[in-house]
Length: 406
Image 1 (cartoon, one colour):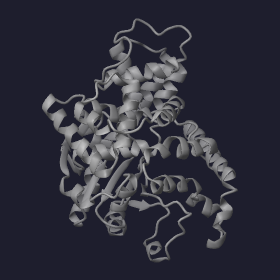
Image 2 (cartoon, rainbow, N blue to C red; image 1 turned 180 degrees about the vertical axis):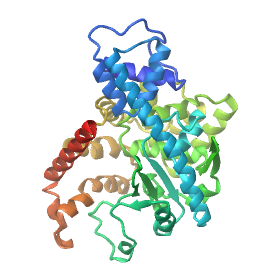
Image 3 (cartoon, rainbow, N blue to C red; image 1 turned 90 degrees about the vertical axis):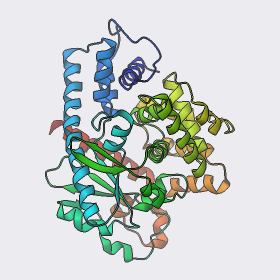
Image 4 (cartoon, rainbow, N blue to C red; image 1 turned 180 degrees about the horizontal axis):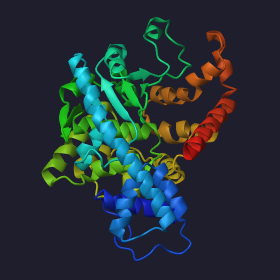
């Protein structure tokens, strides 16, 4: 583990009340330490403010230039979270008036549930789940609030079923003029696609809890349900960001909870994972969290995963991605490794393994836009995938570079 990433892990752990490897008080940064790389890691892993808090607790101070960059980014994203918290309340209130049940996912909701403050966990967008098979019923109140969908039309739902070769987005993105963040609206099938088994969405909504901070209120999944989503989401993305793994580590450790509440939470999580058949995903999250932090595994979680086969290749893949900050996740080699090295061991049936592997051959909707082909000829996109992947990476690089100078 590079010293810059190792320090980031310690900083974030101590800031989130997790046990850490190494010292809890450090006199100075060692010579040869790349402060710019550390700052880059903190920003890429969406942990800038958390890293700052950890540095302060460790007693470390960066050089003024590097400290200034980290502080500026942390301040900007905190202001963004304040705006997101406001809109989480406004949008879900509008959904309630339209008789559409809506839950806030991750972001301010998991921040409140895991850390007691909607602004502690870092996030840059707003995820909302509506209890509807499509997002069409939500369009009137969203547009009334000024939110316009990106590349979405209700008429698409009446068209013939798309080819299974085409990836289906698990959410619809909304933008508002002058607003610096996006809203991702998920219909109820979005939850089903995020988890590894079909869930009873109505029960999830029935168990929902009301959260409040500074007069802003909204509903969110009960913590055991939310924990299942958090673990599923991290797994779906190869646990490539420390931002996600910190949440899993806090859940597993029961950090910040009294023993009784912690035991109730772990019993609830174990039950949910068993009901969804997600014990392999839980085992992976536990092993990764314990790789970074000396967490004692609660007995109830240990009993839920004790019979699961080893996941050494999946763990190694995730640790390698963490140390690159997900920088190589879009390469062809990594995508193949993700499906066959990381994901395959998490499925216990041939059908599950095939379904996971098949996603490697699905076509990105943006590729269809770039090169429209008749349905019988869609397979021709597959040999062109390296070109399209490279094109998207160049576009994202140019967008980031333009943003940095804007």
